[in-house]
Image (cartoon, rainbow, N blue to C red; front, top):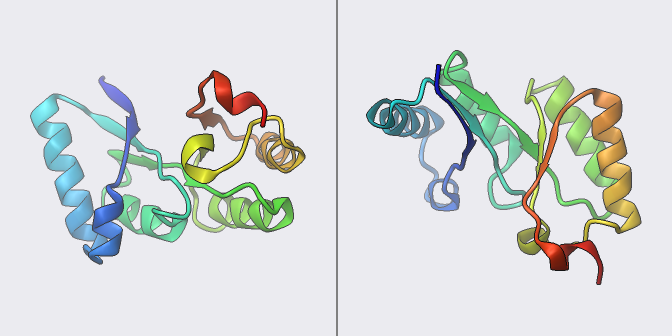
Length: 135
């Protein structure tokens, strides 16, 4: 089985209001042409909302796995949205991107969000580079 653990829903699809079923069909077509059996969708908040990921995955739940994304600041809002995305929408992990979301990894808000992910028992993937560790 081939699993691609790093697929993105283009922000353009969200901006153009591409229907989630069409988005799922496009992703599955790409996966079929590339020999991919299962794809993990890694959104980047606020550009691709968790609700949209949920709706795309709902069309192909055997082939698509959705992760959530939150902007970590403020932490209380981020943790609330993360819990909703995991517990209510059934998303399965957390994707963070310091460069695109405007934070550094060691900020207290980020630590709170990552701790919340740990409490939820979900994996966290961070698209980070050396400069993302501090201000």
